[in-house]
Image (cartoon, rainbow, N blue to C red; front, side, top):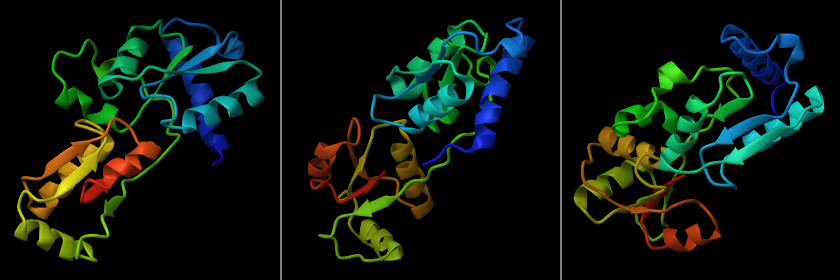
Length: 205
């Protein structure tokens, strides 16, 4: 995957503009020291941040340091960036979860819309539904019909409540008219995830 050149320009120009509006450094001086890209998930999660950092280092001849601060579906990282000096040197690599965390979590120490300023869109991704070969249904309508005919018998793997796969699963249940399904929550996707998935009937990644 190659980071889009226009998005890289938006990222650096946007960070510089934000720092100016908030009383920071001049645009022509940015970046004059290392920039920290904060990722709200464990190492090995979103790889786009490291590709972006590498491309920005090559272009701007300054260090862009990726830091993984996992926890609370990205809220730990978002809170840290919200508290940071708004000078463009501490940037948050957002995920889809940041868009709905304000609704799912009570008493957050920050307001995502108020405290985090958007700079650039660097990635788009979707969810993929996987179904065990042990199930008879071979199409999505057949799977929905099977789930309705067998309430409570479908275990669906996800990365946990509030995660993108978990939210995709809830959306799918709502659209399919299914309100009750058991979930097997997996902390993250890794080689051991394949073993866990064999104990479930479906999963969303």
